[in-house]
Length: 250
Ligand code: FPP
Image (tube, rainbow, N blue to C red; front, side):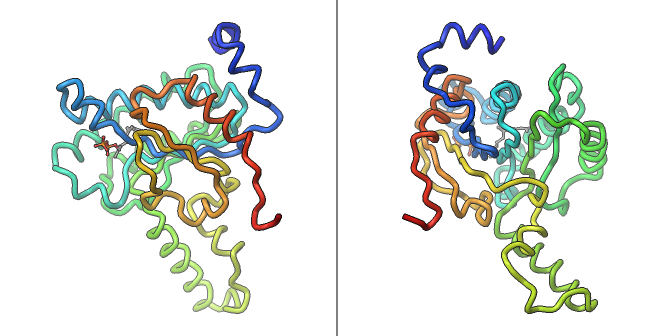
């Protein structure tokens, strides 16, 4: 599939440097509601289409050689949305987890869910366990789905864990450093995202990977997430590769 695309879109592929790919891409899958509204559909239809697009983009990212993809599916702040929308998103998540074998297909995709477990149903928590266990040895790409995730909440959890370690005498407070805080975040098994994509025209982080994105490059676009294509993914990576990343240096 990707081979055919490569042949048809030679111009853009030729500009892609496969030796300089982002190691970890974060995506804020925004614009589902607007996509649905434009078509006179309920917002949940936008989320359903967004989930389909996620499936394709995960495969494409894996085939390109991206090792980690983290997507924002539901934030700790999204609970205030109308109940029918929250229910629709949770139902979609349940179906996604139930269907993980089909989603993965022949691809070597590991699925992890990151975020707070508080407030999630027992049913979803059990399904998360099943999917994480079943895919734990897959290595081509790790798809982290941020569900009930908030960056500030994640930092609070990390600090709380470290507080307990101090209380039990396992570490000295003077040993607290950036590495220790990172090691106690949900993302402790992966590099920080070097590239964050936000479609739909918004230009903010919205509490997504706020600690980890200290040096991330950003890419914004007016495309709503359900319209995001493989071509957009490649275009964004080509743009990333033009950036001069200085990490505070000159
Ligand atoms: C933001 O768009 C999107 C969300 C809050 C949900 C994202 C979820 C998905 C794409 C579904 C993924 C599902 C699974 C099962 C992994 P918005 O609703 O805020 O859109 P708007 O800004 O246009 O209103």
